[in-house]
Amino acid sequence: MNSPKIPLSVLDLVPVREGESVSDALVHTADLARTAERAGYKRFWVAEHHGMEGIAGGATSVVLAHVGHATSTIRIGSGGIMLPNHNPFVIAEQFGTLDALFPGRIDLGLGRAPGADSRIAQALRKDLMRSADDFPRDVVELQARFAGHPGLPVQATAGVGAHVDLWILGSSLFGAQLAAQLGLPYAFASHFAPGQLDAALKLYRERFEPSETLAQPHVMAAMTVIAADTDEDAALLGTSGDQSFVALRTGKPGKLKPPVPGYRESLPPEALAMLEFQRQASAIGSPETVRDRILAFAERTAADEIIVAGHIWDPAARQRSLELTMAAMRGADTPETMAVETAS
Image: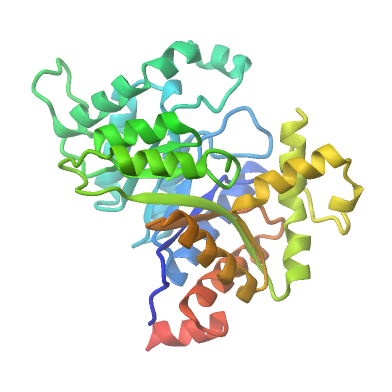
């Protein structure tokens, strides 16, 4: 089987569709992970969000256990755990347990943004501003807990000796600088916050200090990727994500809505401009269009990996989008061709 020109991974938010439940969303996420594994994606990551009716990935480690049992080889992880919401001891226990369940498959992407507002902070009983300031120290503590550092008064039993790959996530220069200083791989959230992408990657590579974990810089960049038979079909599928993004930015988040023909044409100029800015890191169209845009983005960023996100209303269409994308990146004509190559 041909390998893609650049490794591809999947970021899932466990979206809850209108008319469906959290249970339905978790079933769809497991199905999507199985599809990603069959298609040859490298990683399947779940993001932590809280208090949002349309996103069911808040209990990230529990969701990852569900995904792990639904798959057998694909790496699974957080994209990411928002560390200000937690203490490092508990995260070491959770991800150490995941490593015990699924050895050699666990990634722990760590973010500094709380992914929550003041109401969620109160519910979590956390001072998120102070916790965000403690982020570098908490990352170092996590490393020490996985290593079983003797200076720690209490060991996280499931965490000690766990082979969990740590990543720093970010959408600004702060995360890039920390990842470089600690010699950790760095993932940039360019699928929704592309503004500082180029500056952050430049800073990370220039200031990278080799570590026991990593000898040279390693970058994963995120894209919104939606593939369908034609550019027009993909654009229509993409309107579900457009609606979610506009709703979130206007303070009216909800469940994932079905696609709407002509949705963009119905928007006021400021909302359309917001969508166009967010779409800087996107590949939406036919397999050929998607392939060309992913390759162009990979060339621009010199990324070592690409992680693909994208809200699609129909779970079957989202699975097919992953298949079409991987087939296009391998140079296969169709997902069926890819399946034949896999079987051979």
